[in-house]
Image (cartoon, rainbow, N blue to C red; front, side, top):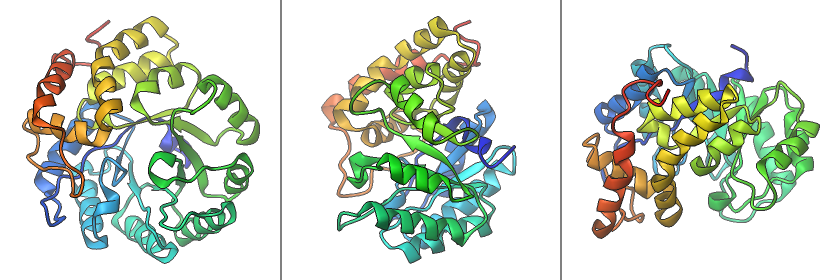
Length: 307
């Protein structure tokens, strides 16, 4: 596996269950990780947005990565989010991840003061230089309020160990059109992947290299089946599986995927953890809708369920 392909395929983004003081529940975390490992996903990414990286201390982040490395036991690659407001803190987090044994890094340009294109370039350049690990650009403007201009992406792709991009659904135009534009500037083997679970089938069928998936953290089997069908060009099968997820996608858009995934994990008795405050859970009155959305996914026992 190369530095680029480590980010390809289905990457599962599990919750990081923690108590109200931000102390990670490694037992519950381990159970969530084991679901993804047992299913055979291509990688797990700990401490992504679903993994509440921004709400955990450096010590708890390290504890989460240590737990992930122990639980996965080299069975699949482990990626680690290292976003932080300060460049020196992000570099320290990257070094922590490398020391713990992580296989790759995910970096978002967190900020309070809005960042310029050059500031983000220098931030990524510094974090990339802090370790020898391959790094994925995390483009998440809904949380960072930063837009990567095409020239910035081209500059970042020239840094040797920046090898992948995690993109949201485009606000304008099609995924296929965006991929064509990106391929022209970020030539293979640079890995191009998408989050925003509701656009995953469309992205993979359009030729994206990877799906960085929130829902795979709870339901890795149908997520993997969708991924493999799309990778094989089996459009009808991929869209059939995507349709089973559709009620959940609607809830993601209404309440935010983080809130919904916490509620889903609670309903499945996988953890009793709640979102970190000030984030509030999905209203109790809406829980029946989440339970209903989970029902089509509950019967998956193998990736061939819909074959």
